[in-house]
Image (cartoon, rainbow, N blue to C red; front, top):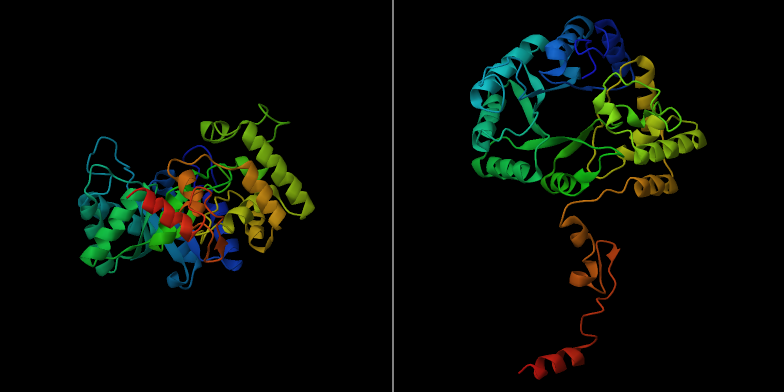
Length: 345
């Protein structure tokens, strides 16, 4: 999303290529973009890099997205219907200078298109060899589940990945989306793991109101007391481990259940180096617990209810390593159960 300066912020094509080269030299192989990023320029930058700098296209896993419209006023230019998906893919293939996409994401749920149409279209594209795998981004858990079960029932290509916003400042996905991904076998690739740079350490309580973020409201809307408190803890842990706040935030996220590949939005080589350093950072349990506590989200019903019913359904047992206390409202013995049953006859 940061490749290209067409939105008034971001990275030049030359710097973008240096970032990709450093990333690949460091062992990276997964590059994620979208047809809409910097008005299509992001895909063009990646395509030019692949065309001129790589000896083997297949050494990379290239992911891009459909849904966003680049043509204002055209109702068929966006969404997840068959016509728009075919057109979006053809344009992405042209900009990326490749004849296939490794992972093709639906950028967002299209509530105007039946999910059967979207999934059958994507299956056709897999069978045609134009895409290898399918993923969903920014879609409710119930709709992802419907799509996955429809694909399984029809014998279509299934979803293999989920791209969602996930960070220390956005953990509500732990209510439905993460459990759904774990249950359905979807790899989770979080976007905005640093919350548009809020968790990088650049924005602190001391500099509140003094920094003017390039991304404007996207950043300033998240600069609140909780964010500053979390950043202060990231700075403290970073100093203790001789690391950066951003690396600590990424290391925290990378160890969360279901997370397979965290999407970095590095705008400079130095940012990329700091972010990649998170892979070698081992947080102590006390660090994880501290960050968990400061960022604990309020989840929708029935998340909290389910989390606290262990003794209700499994009281006095240990299942899969988890021990549940006895339910104080349950009968204490077989005799008491028999007496209760007899009293009701």
